[in-house]
Image (cartoon, rainbow, N blue to C red; front, side, top):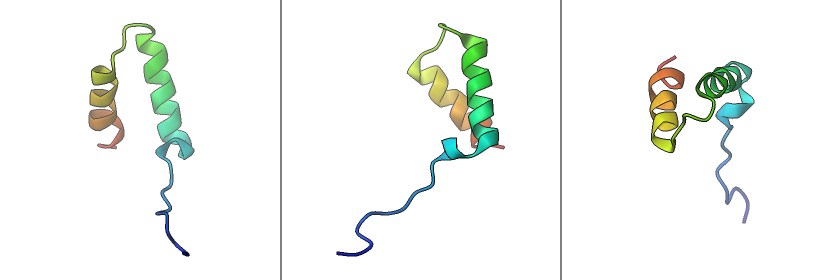
Length: 48
């Protein structure tokens, strides 16, 4: 069956988004939760 799987490009493949996420994670260090990370992604990464 051809074309069975949807081909999705990862946002981490985008150098600008990758850099934003790395800088955010370095700034919060160990003070991170899944909820905080999700909120950052929704507000900062997807809004840009």
